[in-house]
Length: 291
Image (spheres, rainbow, N blue to C red):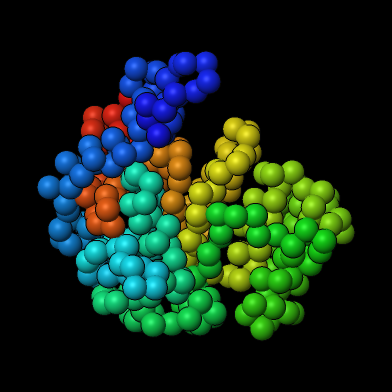
């Protein structure tokens, strides 16, 4: 925590670690400051405008959490087909809980989640994958290290009970990404961090989703691999028309990428706008971008 002393007698600062030393704020300070900007939270009309006038994926008045603990409080969200949305906010704001709720990993107390005209609120994760075309790219390393790169890709198709289609889709992945093709018969444990992330994204693509939920795509990666991952995500959105909702610890990188940015505070939507406009917002910059 901010103010903790180390053995050398110097102040040890923890928090987001961005900006000059005299501007670094603790996580608690960021959360308190962020709550102040929530007084002008956007309404549904504004969210629909940001979604291009027609929401492909929408969340209305969602209350959700884990066990009996409610994390999200009457949360609204809208994103148009083929758009990208980046969720930012202080630790514990509920960003990953939104992804978990869309995919079916939380307890839903009330509210509705729709994809297209389909109410997917109560669907299990495998149903959402098969029936609603939602794939989740986890934050944690989720490759099977002792299986080959090729076998890891096939797993995406087995999850949909379509192994033949999986093999065909894997070949398309290898055509698109020579980096993986060169290692197709090698165990996944030999891949670099960036290559593992590429494999995780590619395995999701084998499932042929319409919606990609991406949790911390840059976490643990070197800068050159971070750029590669975001280039891949941009290609998936712009070329293949995927709808992408992401949580990204590097708020600047996430907002540079995304069409829309949402700022979350204490499980509620505090601010929303085009990604490039939020990048220029002085309050967002001071709290999350180190400026």
